[in-house]
Image (cartoon, rainbow, N blue to C red; front, side, top):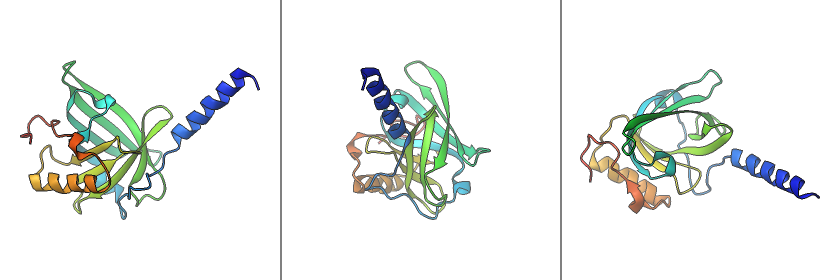
Length: 179
């Protein structure tokens, strides 16, 4: 087999595997999930820092329905280094049934990442989101600030499912007092 063919087949295999998202074995997404109640604006309360949100503060996400039964995702935040607002528009789709909060989300063409809601209060006001692996985690809320008790409950859940909570960044919403 020629080297070019081997490289091409390897590339195609990597591309296909990159597009296949599954829920990590030790993560259980929320059941009885109601996407309609989840839609709207959420504020990032905490996150494990990642390269695509580097230097970002006052981050929010707005979710709305798409015509293709997916969810439109509009992430917005202020880049402290560049001193500009930035916005990314993506799309999300359920991995299976729509009442299990396991989705895949993409901001970059055919490449998807996991979006698993693993803790959600009954009023859909605070959520813990895990990615496809232990490198991605967010606490989101309908308001830019939440109580210390809520923070503690959601951090404990993150710890329980194996995330390094010592790396959580709470310096995101500049109008809140940072712990």
